[in-house]
Image 1: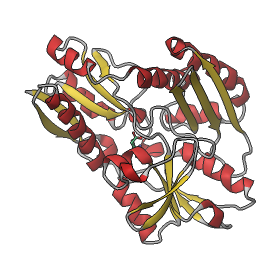
Image 2 (image 1 turned 120 degrees about the vertical axis):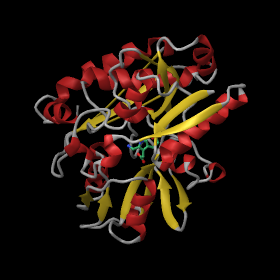
Image 3 (image 1 turned 135 degrees about the vertical axis):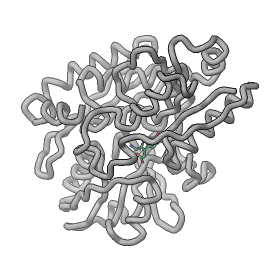
Amino acid sequence: MIRIGARRSPLAVAQAEWVAARLAELGHPCELLGIDSLGDVDRRRLTEIGGTGIFATAVREQLLADRIDVAVHSLKDLPVAPAPGLVVAAIPEREDVRDVLVGLDIDQWRDGTRVGTGSPRRAVQVERIARERGVAVEVVPIRGNVDTRLGLVRDGEVDATLLAAAGLLRLGRLSPEAVTTGVDEDQDVLIGDLPARLLSLDVLLPAAGQGALAVECRSDAPDEVLQALAELDHAATRAAITAERTFLNTLEAGCLAPVGAHAAVGEDLTLRVVAGEQSSNNEQLHVARVAGSPQDAGNLGAALAREVLPLLTGTGIDQKVEEAR
Ligand SMILES: NCc1[nH]cc(CCC(=O)O)c1CC(=O)O
C-alpha cells in the first residue's frame, strides 16, 4: 500500500486523489493521509507570513520521517530549491495553465472596481490591464481556498477575483467540456452562476509551474515506488517546468514574487515571462521571450533571467524578491 500525503485543502485532496487513482490503475493501491501546513493554519497574508514553501514544508517533513511514501504538491507552490533527500519523481501532464477572471469582466472595470487577489504576480498584471484601459482599479488582498474566494465575489466583497483554471477544473467548478479554446485565446465561461473569462496568455501570464503537479518521494524510495511514479511523468511538461523554474531560480524569485512565466513545447520550447513591481503607479513591467530545444530547458530559463535581471535592478523587484523568498 503506497501512503500518499497532501495538505487537507479541498484542492490538495482532489490532486492527491487524482494521483492515487492513476497509481491504482497501474496496479498500486494507495491510501491518503491529510497533513496540516502552516499556510493553512495561519490566516495572515502569505506575503506577511513570508518564507518559501509555506504549503510544502509540513508535507515534506512527513515524507522525510517515512510517515508517507509519496507527496503531492501544486508545483507552483513548491520552492524552486531542491529538498535534500527528496526527488520530484513525477510531473504529470499539466492542466490548462490559464488564470480565470471570475466576476466583473475587464470591459466593465471602472475607477474603484475591487479586484481581489493576494498574488503580487496577478496584482501587477491587473494594474497593467487597468492602466491600459485608463481606469484605476483597487487590488484588494484576499486569500483563502477556491470556494472562499468565489464566495467573496458572490457576496459582493470584491467585484472580481483571479483563480487558476487548473484548480477550478480539478475541483469540478469548471467542466473540461466547457473549455474549447487554447491558451492563446480568451473564453467566456461560467463558474457556478458567476460570469468568468479564461484569460489568454497575452492578457495575463500564469505563475511558473501553474497547472502542474509535483509528485515527490524520498530519493532512496523502493524501486517499485520510483518506477510507478516514473510512469506518471510527462516529458514535455517537465521540460516546460524546468525552463519556468530555472528562470525563477536564476532571478532568485520565489512563488510570491511579481513574476509570471510560461513555457510550452511545440516544435521548439518557448518560454515567455513577465516581471514587475507591485505598486499601483509603477509602469515597469518587463516582458521577454526565448525559444530553443527542450533539452536545453534549464539554460533557456537561466539565459532569459540574466536578460531580464538588469532591467529589474532598481525598480524594487530585487527587494521584493528578497521579501518573498
Ligand atoms: N497558491 C494557491 C494555489 N496553488 C495551486 C493553485 C491552483 C492549481 C494550480 O495552479 O496548479 C492555487 C489556487 C489558485 O491559484 O487559484
